[in-house]
Image 1 (tube, rainbow, N blue to C red):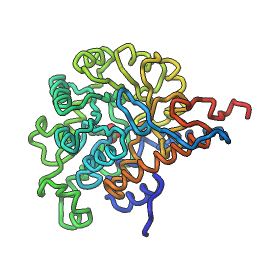
Image 2: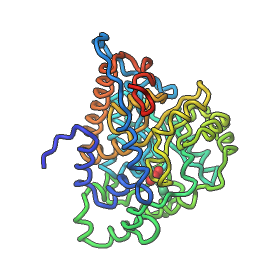
Image 3: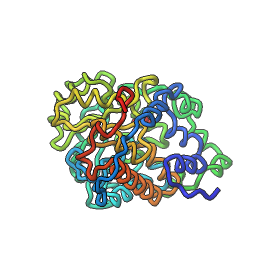
Image 4: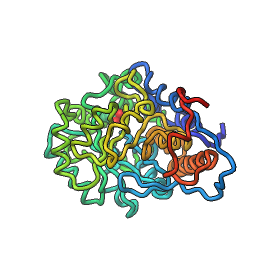
Length: 388
Ligand code: HOC
């Protein structure tokens, strides 16, 4: 099939063909029955834009500022764990594409490429995502490393005190038991059935390392050992007091990701967050919870005006970015879309995806009769309880 990808679902289809099953499922899957994963997408589709005509939309500007970073569209690439395995040094490819599109790239704690490697791509700053690890010394050291390579925006994930139960990962053996990695490395047949880059990824035959963690897990010989280490390090005792501690350690912008209730939005603001991300971790944590987009308006209403509100989960096109902004978001983050695109077509795929999002956002503004992001408001939507 020679599909020219134009939409996220196109990139997804190509990614599914190219990636080994366990890796595709890791990205594509959610928790339990994947109810929230589906809801995130479906709830966007239920939001109708209000078309307006004859309003001089000959010049449309999609630019915005997200937590202090100027962006060509109000969108940032979300952190994707093990994202670097989706293509050869995939996080580097995605960072290049994000630079070209003028949007921030967020590197995950559990990335394959390290902070230092990503910083070499360009002078354009990137965002860094961190979890609270039991070893606060490691947290402080990672923060210092991030700062010293130019990161000024920290995305701190708060919805992973424990890892959600993901049936696909359990079935595939990369969670909750037998190790796929061990099986994959076991013999020549399994070697041949997986793409070459998955094995060498520029590391000359060495196993994958989690770039940011390599020095803390020096004896690791395969990714399972990193996952085990990270699993043991997740601190389930963490509370908002720890965020106050973190606030003291980090002088840059602090974005708290994983808020799904107004009360938690308020608590994040009180702990010193500059921004919050309304998120259910892409439906990967507690299945059955509300979609991010349906929760967004209540969180926006609750948190003080000076705290930015972003959202992620279910954003699949530029029109969804428009919908989120109209519901009060300053912008969105996208995870799976860039993961599919980089797996499908590498850097060019992510560039193509981001160009499509920008075009679609621009069309949405124009056909709703406005020419800038600042003019986008709830009035440009028809919601269920509105009279048409
Ligand atoms: C034990 C390591 O955010 C995801 C990521 C990272 C999880 C790391 C688990 O898969 O949702």
